[in-house]
Image 1 (tube, rainbow, N blue to C red):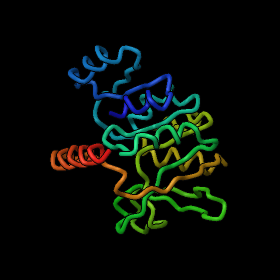
Image 2 (cartoon, rainbow, N blue to C red):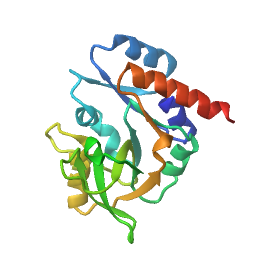
Image 3 (cartoon, one colour):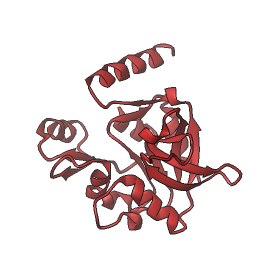
Image 4 (tube, one colour):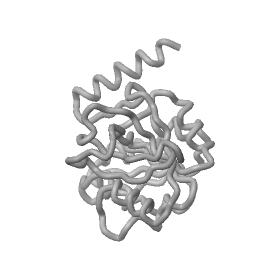
Length: 195
């Protein structure tokens, strides 16, 4: 579904990072989406490692979307690619230490710090795993494979301007296990049924 939405948003070059052992998904993508570039992780080592594996796609303006998360509003992807600024997507939560967390400057509308699941949260805002980078981002992906949040902090610390969108938490769905997958399918069905 994310691939479909990327295409509708006008994204020309799409890359996907898969586990080396996930032959079924790899064959499906090759058959159904032959123009998509596939990168492989040698072992499932997290989102930051996946970004490291596909880092060459970050040498131009791009959307980065975790494979287990989705914004329900398909027009959101269009709005992201039309932005003049690099952006994070944030939503307010009661338990920010369970998420990638962002501190923002509301007056300047800028992200000023990010941390991955901090014991002492920076704010009440969690990061949805969808990002838009207007300028090349690859130079901020360090040679060490780490959390993607650390790559983003590298960029902020280097003066990379980063804005944000705040969405309602109900607009973001994440699939972390079988129960979450069922919940995701139900939410998506109800969201599109109302149209």
